[in-house]
Image (cartoon, rainbow, N blue to C red; front, side, top):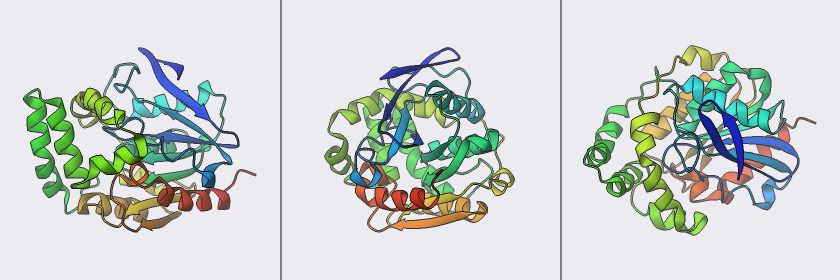
Length: 269
């Protein structure tokens, strides 16, 4: 792991491969969510830049809870590796950060790829209340100090049953212990983080965009992704058959293929 200096400390970061740069922004819970995808032959022509966001692993603690600040961290990773422009791939909660990067520094984003990325905070979809109610058990466990139960309950709300075996096959078994250690960041920092990003800002994004949706995802993530895709003026949509919100964590090859095709069509060359 490399160390990227940011306000209040440093972020754990890494670079692998050669070719056009692709910045990876992970979501909540699982910091190493892209590990199973970056080594696939379909994506061999790209240089991947990944990092553990604040509060994950041994990265710096959160200085303030704003999406704008999280986006500054993402840009700091590009600066550290001397990258002026990159493709940006963001998963889940990381999607909100990726959209903020597009707003703050559009000239540095060649393309934006949302893997069921979160939308602006003013986007409220019909299934939001049901999803939040389902995730409430995880919050209650967290308030009770049981981080493992909170992690298990949240992932079940996100992906249904069977998520542990599916992710173990791709990431190994150590990912879960790290997720349990990091889950406090999800509830105390990520979820309460403030943002001024709005749907109007999304509609102003002009870079080519791809929205990837799992066909079997719970309604909340499908509806949010569809709304983001509708707002982005240049977006394409890909449906991953048999996929849910875990996407590249459970089925990296199914996600890598459409990503590679999209990146090739929008090459920097």
